[in-house]
Image: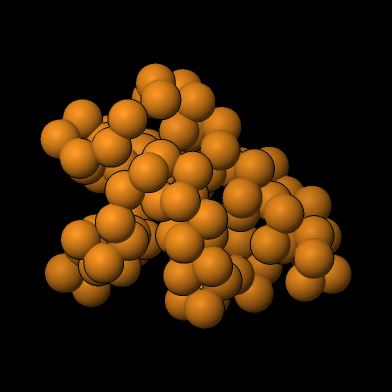
Length: 93
């Protein structure tokens, strides 16, 4: 998968979780920090998206730990995609 495909899949996964949870649609871009910027998006939702995206990329979710944070700092979409791309290059597709 390319970085653009990973980004699109990540955003789609986040939007799907938000929709299924009955939350309002919000614009999501590279600078969006899902855990801060999205209405009621929490760590459980982040784990749901993590499982989905790692399955799509063919990588081990356990290797990433918590995809949406790094040492307690909440990550932007751009940073999450960067982490995924690094793992996909070495482990996945």
